[in-house]
Length: 507
Image (cartoon, rainbow, N blue to C red; front, side):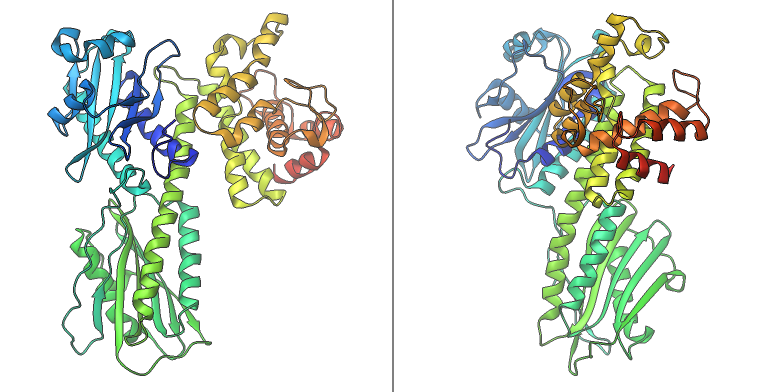
């Protein structure tokens, strides 16, 4: 899907798919499809929700197709069709998919149509209303931001401020504002990555005398500063002033500078260059009432200031994009556990517990931060296949018969299908095989020992621990002591003993 879009990857599709899912969550449409502009001028189907195999959904729309022409006609406003006779030119499109209603939401960027969303048929045959149109416009704005951030539409890059000219020289160091990519998301892992990148970049430029990474969140401002030995607060003041000025111009209200939290690291292996100094500062990431600003003071003649700011801006853009992928992936996972109009509180609670345990076990086993993130995601979605089965009945059966057992066992295959279709292919094997046993007597494929994916082994042990000890389980909970004994007895038979040992160290 979306083969003709530049830079389109499974990670990119996850981000778009999660945002598109909001049409089902917030507009309450039962189907939605996202089309994006390809280099050849056609609009390719990037991703979709809800359309079945028998429903005709165009893989692409030519520039003169009725849908594209209608999207250009209404510009950046949504168009609603609650009756087929309201838009005869779209009648064939609706009829092909057996639809009665459509909400067409154009996506405009830089005064051109870069894509559109085709949403169909609200639940319970309700019509689309004005509130749906307002909601759709908000989601469309986020989709356009995502198009800019990912660069999947040719010629539509990040929405960045223009670089300003140098300010007039005064007794303070000369100042210069650098252009920066606009970001939207920075999670804790992203913030840690950005700080490590900041430290590494500063270490590469010995002519830098002062460097600061400033984060503002509401009424709080935190600063990490690196200074050359012998420099102090007076040397940092012009840089702080310049960063504060940049934030104010973005409409952010700053607290007094004496309330800022500043952590300073002194570098003994650098020396301050004698000669004219220049200040460079840039908003690296901004969203709502929080922002991250980078700033440096260095030798004007060496060119180190523009070099380091350029690299910081580029890396901040990449890190923000990675954070957005993680954020979108996790929100998509929550959406899969809670389909529109349906809730499974017991399943959600169990899934969250298993997700937490898998993270802790993976961490104890020494897996990388990325692998721990993936294990937590797989733990969260390990039973997602239950939502397409008769979950409410199966979950509460104390003595299931052969038919119920077969139905229950099918949830791992359904889960494999669901996450694969959602673009979460890196966890499909963990979900499919999380009921395999170390001795080969599990299901669905009878894998054994090291042949079972490690994440599946971690989930299996974590899930059984939660079932044994949780008061919300379908069975009477054990005491922790008895659960420990049970898990240890099954090590090497049902479970990987190494995983059991790690689990018992973290519970």
